[in-house]
Amino acid sequence: MLNELNKDRVDSKKPRKEGLTSVVDRLQAIDKENFEILSPYIDIVKIYNVIPLLISEAVLEKKIKFYHDFDIQISTGSTITELTILENSFDKFVKEAAKLGFDIIEIAENNLQLDADQKKQIVNTILSNNLDFHWKV
Image 1 (cartoon, rainbow, N blue to C red):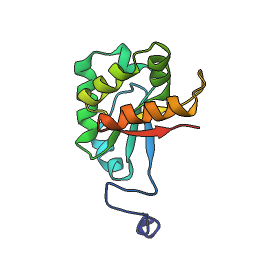
Image 2: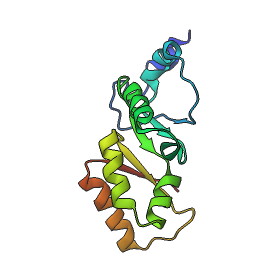
Image 3: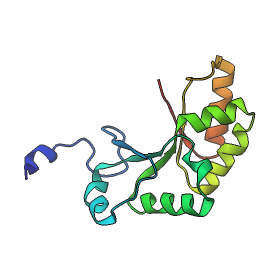
């Protein structure tokens, strides 16, 4: 249906650099059959809020693998990032996120103010762990 609307999508092959589509995983159940239909259009799944703190690493790794099997990158939410910065555990958080299979660390300043040097240090920590970052505004 309406295939002509889809044919000119920017960068139709993953990984895309433009026209990225991001969705949020709020710990809902996933219908694999329907997800297979949608997955070509999804680039990033953000695991919402502090959900990674509330579920076991085994469940989290299974979720991450599920999305990776569809060539979808996985992002943390900014709330957990802000929490780890405030609790002085950001470096450990980034290392563990990389180990678990996250691809992107989302950063925001909803609950804290960061100066330019702090921002640079945060970015360097993320990049040194072979992860990408998205700064949420």
